[in-house]
Image 1 (spheres, rainbow, N blue to C red):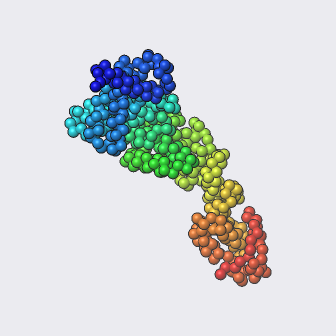
Image 2 (image 1 turned 90 degrees about the horizontal axis):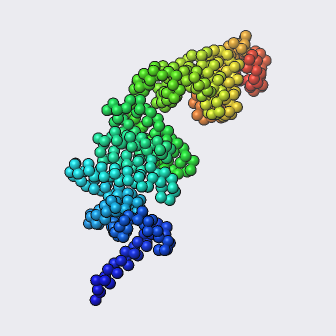
Image 3 (image 1 turned 90 degrees about the vertical axis):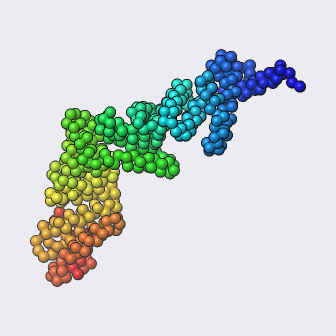
Length: 472
């Protein structure tokens, strides 16, 4: 039969064993390595009780987790030892706060009394604050994790009490500032939603909705691009879903009328604010609001303050769309210094069409050929050249034959366009049918002692060799 002394000895032995396990987990290999002050620092003044309660709550927590957080009986065994550890040895392990958040979430979700629920929410917020205080860096990487923790805190606050959106906004704003492109997609969603609530209440200017939208979409686009390069299709889809969620939330505020209303007053106050001008042009461009006069005005002002081929491209493209061809040419020529090949090709084709509208056919062809240097299979460039030839046919001859031969080379270009680029086949075929009817009739061909199938050089500014064909 065991004496009282032997019972106490056995209990102490067991506690020493548990403490040793915890110390080994903390990096101490031998009991002799242990500095009493280090133990007190990590496990508190009553280190033995700390280890006991830590081991108890962790064991029951693992069982609760294994039940998919449904075993109520097991959960009841967790709270008391966890609370003791939280209050008495706060730096024993970061699990206190990771597990504590899950414990509080469970209590909040099962609490019916609103006043009690609010107290539990406050406790959950305190858990996040304590985690930031004692574990500001990742336990293994050593990298800062305050922004990540704030993200979790803000998402939970928005989830459990949407009336506290001002707190949520401040928390998530700071999280995104710290995390930047590493911000979690869910954090970005709730940050944007809390911003909308702030704007509706009047706590922030309505332009903040656009600013934050622009900010979070840029982060999501960055991650979609990076993950696509990595081949991580699962997370690419996740981030696209995050983006779709935010786009849907932004939709009521995304009309051109609303965006212009928001930006117009800002522009009037600070017309030389380059950051604002870039935001205006980018946002109106994203939402297809280029037809509004503000877009052109802001684009021109931005180009004056910070000229670039890209801003010249935006202005030139818009002026062309408004059929201000003479005005567009200068900007489009400036835009040909761009390095983006797709936009550069478009610039050359717009220049070709603008020059064509001004009947400067040689210069127009030169620009279309520049586009073909970038992409030899650009069907639209071939169609432009074909249109130039067809448009100048009557001016390139002085008799029944020479006023029609340009249609031969025009149709040649349309055939080339169709063969090179299937996307323009319909447009090319329509032109082939139309202008083949303008070929000189057979009697005219014979009259000038020519024969179908022979070569013929079209003069004028065109100067291209083609094949003789008669109208059918």
